[in-house]
Length: 319
Image (cartoon, rainbow, N blue to C red; front, side, top):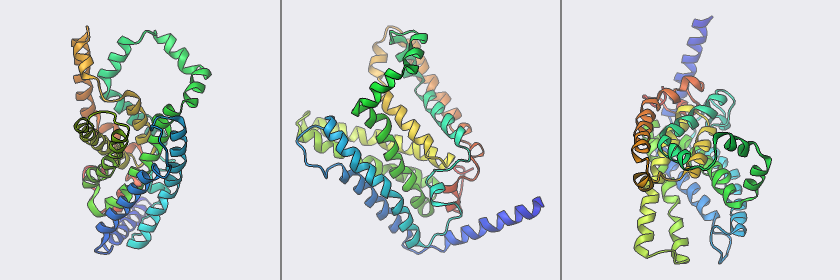
C-alpha cells in the first residue's frame, strides 16, 4: 500500500512539474508585470486620499487603513488571474499557495519568531539592561487588559504592529512569491520579491520632501538606506515564507522587527556595558546563521510546502 501511495504521489508530482514546464513563454513577463501592478496598487492606495496632514496623524492613518485593506482583500484576485492567464494548474489550493493553511501552523507561529529574536539577541539584552521594570513587573504589564486597550486605541501602534505587517506580507510575499517561483525558481524569487517591497517604500521620500523633514540629500540617503534594509528584510521573510509555506511566520517576524527597529549600534558602543552587549550582538548573529536552516526545515511545516510545488527545481531552499 505504501508503494502504491508513493507511486501515486510521484505521478502527481511529475504531472504538476509537466504543467509547470508547459506554461507559456511569456510567464516571466506576466509574473513581473502582475507583481509590479500589485505593488503600484498597494502604494497608490495610500495616496487616493487628499490631505495636508502628515502620515502619523490619526485621521490619515485611518483612511489609509481603509485603502490598503481593500487592496489586500483584492490581492488574491491578481494571483487567480495570473494562474488563469498562464495556465498553471497547481495541486494546492489558492489559499494554501498564499500560506493560509492549518498543517504545520503551530511551528510556523513559534519557530520563525524565535529565530528572529535570536538575531536580535544583542538589542534585546540591551533593552533588558536599560528597562526600569523587573521581570515580574513586565509580565504584569503584558497580561494587563488596560495595556492592550491602550495599544489598540493607538493608531500608530495598530499600523506598525498589525496592519502594515499583515497587509505587506500578504501582498508582497503571499501573493507575489507564488507568481515568481514558477518563473525564477525559489532561490531567485527570494531575492527578486524584495525589490518590489523595497521600491514600494520609496514613497516615504515624497512625504518627507513635501513636509520639508530634512535636506534633500539627507532624505535621499535615508531612502537608499531604507530601500537596502527593507530589501534585506524582505528577502528574509520571503525565505521564511517559502521554507514554511505559511503567512503567519513572516507577519509575526515583520511585527517584531517593526517594534525593535534597526539595531542601535551607536548606542551599544556608548553603553557602560558595551562589551557584554556587543558580545551578545555577535552571538545572536552567529546563532542565527547556524539555526537558519534547521529552524525553518520544511519537515516541521509539511514538506514540500505548497509554493515549492510550483517548480521542478526545488534546490536546497525547498528541502
